[in-house]
Amino acid sequence: MRFVVLGLGLLVAGIAAGAGGGSGGQRRGGDGRRRLHRLQHGQCSYTFILPEVESCRTPGNPYGNVNAAQRDAPPAESDWSAQKLQHLETAMVNNTQWLQKLENYIQENIKKELVHIQAHAVHNQTANMLKMGTNLLSQTAEQTRKLNVVEAQVLNQTSRIEIQLLENTLSTNKLEKELLMQVSEISKLQNKNSQLENKVLVLESQHKTELEDLREEKERLQNLVVHQTMAIEALEKQLHVASNNNSALQRQQQQLMDSVHRLLNMVSTGSVLQWRELRFRDCADLYRAGHNVSGVYNIHIDNMTEPIKVFCDMENSGGGWTVFQRRVNGSVDFQRTWREYKMGFGDPAGEHWLGNEAVFRMTSQGQYSLRVELKDWEDNAPYSQYDRFQLGSEKQHYRLLVRGYSGTAGHQSSLAPHGTSFSTRDADNDNCMCKCALMLTGGWWFDACGLSNLNGMYYSVGHNIRKLNGIKWHHFRGPSYSLRSTTMMIRPSDF
Image (cartoon, rainbow, N blue to C red):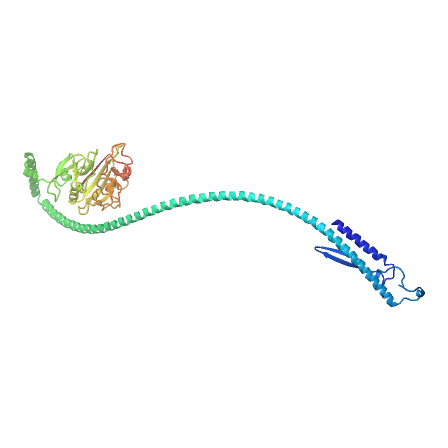
């Protein structure tokens, strides 16, 4: 490319020199002007400096072809113009030839340069292509590595998702099972709810019956009070008469002493008929009659045709106690039916249950108190006492009526609340959806499997801890301690 430019410079200089050689003649209007001539070839352009035509005059005779004879005459105007035109045509031909040579030279050099440029461009493009290929290979390798990493991550994520799906499936199955269990529990609860509603209806009917019984008892007590008032008035009258007539009182006293002597004689002679006339309703009557030794006696309870054997405690807390429950060594099985608890079982001299029917009829004779004596395996012997104790009838499920707690076996009562029914394994009358008599064993006033059960399983020392179905009294040794011995006994409240 440098050679082309240098050649162009030489040509332009030659043209300029040729133009300068013809500038020795006259010029119009002062200095000759130069013209720029531009040639475009493809993307390259070439500029040439050309002189003015007027300055390109041929040196020689300024007067043209004039005869020698006429040299001194002024030249004609037409000849001058013709010479000038011819001169211009010659200059144009020369310039055109130079331009054609220059164009040919430029074209030849441009072709060579283009071939060189194309070869260089191909080489550069090949190098660039190789570089680009290398970059692409490296980028492809990097992308492949990244793709492998992404693929590994995707596989790991897929495996984690599969594990999560498996865990979710297991959780779903577990939830379905729990839902089925909940549905079954709800159905069971609905059944139990219906049973409780039935029990509530039964309790309402029982409550109505109890209210009627209480009204009857109230009327009976009112009649009794009236009779007692009349008797007191009669006694007051008799006392007044006796105080006025001391001799009559002495006679009555003498008659009474005679009656006592006659009774003693009848006892000593062993007259069966006379002995049958002496009937004791409970151990308190026996104590008043002079029997102050603890042991087994016969008593005649009202509305019962046959006498029954009872154990009378004539020593503790003033005596006169009729024992109706005792546990001492586990020799008697207390896992009995409703009928057995009704009629009684065991030996009055040892472990026994007197019978709910006998206790009901005895406590219907008047107002009775209850005393519960306990003993643990460390020889602690507290007691619980109730001022009022009574059992309902069998129709009332031998419901428990207690009032006025005191004692040393706890700061409050462990016995079931007032009005609780008696339950056995074959007669569920408790207030729990479960069967307390089956779960805690024995027969008792369980309420909702409450705080006590003196008829539970008998456990010996060392095996009596953590036993919920043992002989328990909650406020004494807690719910899981089985006691060593228990005694339940009653006597009239006015003893």
